[in-house]
Amino acid sequence: MLRKKWAIDQEVYLEMVIGTLVYAVVFGFFNDYTNIVTATSFSIVFLAAIIMQALVYPTFLLKRQIVNWFTSQKTKASRYWMIFSIWFVLFVSKFIFLGALNFFLGEYIHISGFVGIVVVVVCATLITKLILLFSRLD
Image 1 (cartoon, rainbow, N blue to C red):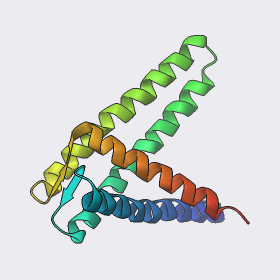
Image 2 (image 1 turned 180 degrees about the vertical axis):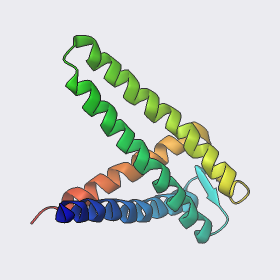
Image 3 (image 1 turned 135 degrees about the horizontal axis):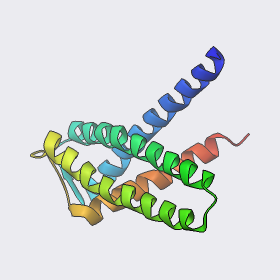
């Protein structure tokens, strides 16, 4: 039992560290080369990355719980409700991300609205998934 908990703790730690570093790179890239993100310093970029990962991780956990709950239901309508619920959680979460970044770092970082945060999250998620995929190859 302790070994299983230890493995889960290591998995969470790994996802949090990799996710934070990826968000730092993505925020930094968009800060340097686009108008999507404007930050005053790398320290702010890194703090934004920590905040984003702290918000994204529970969002994906919630999404996973929604999928598990709706797949246990065996009705045709449950598939449509699952898709709608996932879309709703992911849609609303972007506004929460923007609000949290504005609340904590509002005068130091600017993200160009909803589309900007979606672009950042999609890029970071794809890069993180690729890193985790390639790290499992032997």
